[in-house]
Image 1 (cartoon, helix red, strand yellow):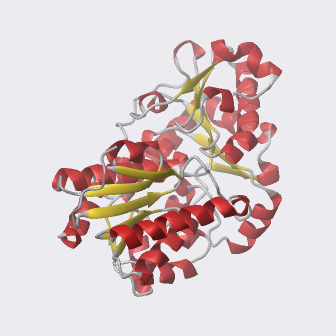
Image 2 (cartoon, helix red, strand yellow):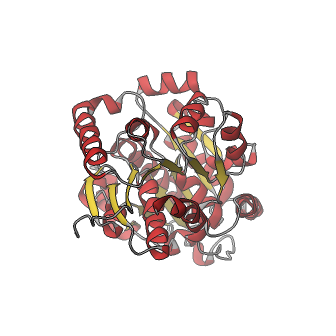
Length: 382
């Protein structure tokens, strides 16, 4: 890595999960394409590390989520906050850019505000889903918030924030949906398994999704599964110790790591952990069952703070249960398989579901989210 250049165009970018890492990396590329003199210091994941001048720490690999789990990393959090504080004091960057990941980035924004360093939020946290009071704090600590859902702009402006809807960055990454016939030729159903991007999510969802897939295979012997994994987790950390999986592993299930979504676009159906993956599937026209299991304490707190009746972005945007959501005790192999069969064994319903999901593209703005955000940030780097 190159050393930090002695320029007033140093910036700090912080993200903490795989999707934030991806979108932050694309924002960094957009900024540097417009001004090659920008020197980027980053704390995030492997994608940000590839495009930054200086990398502080792989925050994505920690994978803390929920209400209880961050406490397990308390001393690491303390260490990382100290690293950020030292960087802000020693280097005095021209600005700080936070990307999603509210818990940690809230601290970063506070440190920047205390030192009168301007800050921006790219892809603001989903405060509307649980704790809208956070919107006022974000508005207070940032110069501008770049939001990716059209309804978020008014939410931040209502609490005195400066917010701009820049469109959803996924639109720049998604290929066009692939035309499909149902049932597929020869009964070769392509089933996606997307258990999540964090260690706890994978351990809770992967065994369920695997077993649900084998229910499908009982009726459709030529079905094949594609297990989508993030770079942070090597194969030996995602392959579950299940005899029935190990027995058929190489023949029935393929691990996929991709950047272009080409394999995902060819899926007929997917078992999906709630999160960005649900929206990715929708934009590709992939019908799905959405599941989420969490630690008991996290679930009890989440029930009390949730402000939306849905957990998947698809249903939140459409304001109706367009995809089946199976939360906590409802996330069972029986329920997952039942939802899969309700679509797989009903081709007209499958095509109707695809059409509705693809229609979400029209709700998310236009291409160029990172470029629009970069244009707004650049004037502050002179």
